[in-house]
Image (cartoon, rainbow, N blue to C red; front, side, top):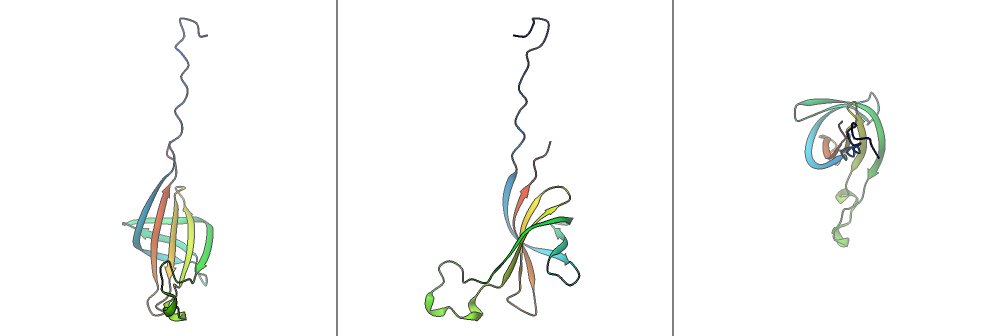
Length: 117
């Protein structure tokens, strides 16, 4: 029990949880030389430097609800996904859509903001 002349000890508030946000927007991405991994990207006018690629995978599936009779190679998704961490600690899930060989495009799926103090 604290003495009368000392203020009571209060527990520290919990650290704010990371917040996840669905985005679904195009990105401008600069890739590593000779590799598909992103090095930096511009989202909503801000440049983010990739500190680390946390995970990557390829999606060449048909997607949910795709009718079985039209499952041909040219109707597959052609995406390479990356989960990256920028220098501020935020995580971004993005993918390179390379179905159209002439016009590859990058898309931001979601952003998970790092807890801020």
